[in-house]
Image 1 (cartoon, rainbow, N blue to C red):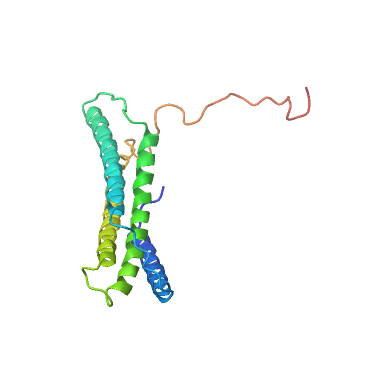
Image 2: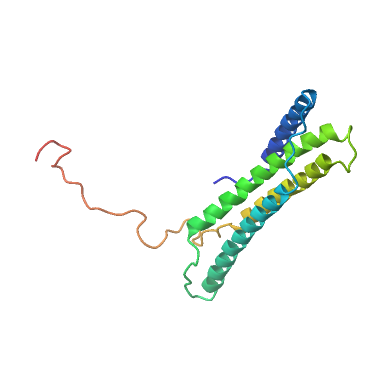
Length: 182
């Protein structure tokens, strides 16, 4: 799985800002209002961010518990399956991309609205709130990525792990189905 790239997130935000600006200019030319998410959407954005952050903290706590037990020479069972950690990481990264998209879109809308409207206008306030929510999503995406890191392999390079790396099935017989003799 690839790591989050700040440059990629900035590119997504810039493209979304351009699209938001163009859409707002076109919609205002048609006599329509600007396409801003309502303020109540911020509750949903922050709720999802809080859930993903909480799940990331659970994964981090599980990793620390296992590392602490290994340092004491004990073996500790995982309370979370590693696949759950991957899912939390994926949710954090998806949140970061969605946050960049939402923040960029509303920044583009804000770029069109601010010269014509005061900072106290409802659409300007909604845009500012959604930009803030999007930035929070991006930050939480990076934090969750840090929390869901897997510790490095404990075997030094050059040494083999205990046990066979692949299953040995014995010698391959010279006869059989593949040779056409039954």
